[in-house]
Length: 291
Image (cartoon, rainbow, N blue to C red):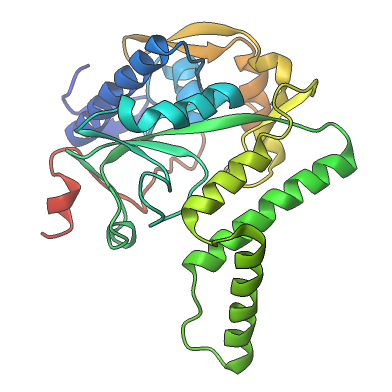
C-alpha cells in the first residue's frame, strides 16, 4: 500500500490515515489466517464490502473494517479467539474484558495504536486500533415470532444500559426503581453484569441458527430493515480485491448493497467517519490518553 498522502475520488487521504489502514490490514490478515487454520467462514460486510466493490479497497473517507460470520462460526471464534490472537493483538469481548464494558460483537485490537474515546479508556479496557467482527443470525419468518425474538434482544440491551448507566443524583423514586430492577435481574439472570449479559444475548440471538429461515440479520445495533437480507444472498462466497488482498465476500453482494445503501455506486454527500474516536496508528493507547 502507498502510505503517502493522496487524493482518492476527490477526497484527500492523509498519510496518517494510510497508516491507520495499514495497521487494520495487518489485523485482517491475522483474522483471515485464524479463519483458515480453524476452517471458519467469514465475509466482508458494510462499508468494507462497499469499498471492495466501488474502490477495490477502503472507502477514502472510511477508517475501519467490518467482517461478518454465520452463527456457528462466530460461536467457534468466541471459543478459540482469546488464545488464537496473541500480543500485540487482543480479542475483545465483555468476557475477555472481565465485564468492564458491554457490546454484542467482537473487536480485534492492536494495542500498538489507538482507536477509542477517552470515556472508553477510562473504563480500563483495551483501546487499540480495531476491526469489527459481527454475527449474522437467522431470524424467524413469522411476524409475531420475529417480534418476540427482537423484543427479547431489546430487553437484554436495556439490561446493558442498566448495568452501565447508573443513576446520578435522582430522587427517591428513581433510586428505588433502579434497586428493584437490580433485584429482578439478579433473580432472573443471576448477575446483571456484562459478561453474563453477553452470554445471554448470544444464546438468544442464535436461537434460530440452522433453522429453515428465509432471512438473516446483523442485529448488533438493533433491528433495522437495512440490516436484514435474504439468506440466499449470503449462502455462497466470492473473492473480491481489497487493497491488494483477496477477501471473501457474499456472492449476492449486489442485492445486499442495494438493500443497505440504495444507489451504492453514487458517492454520498455525507462523508462521515468515526470522528467520535481518536485514531492514531503511531501511539499506543496506554500512552495516547496520558499526553
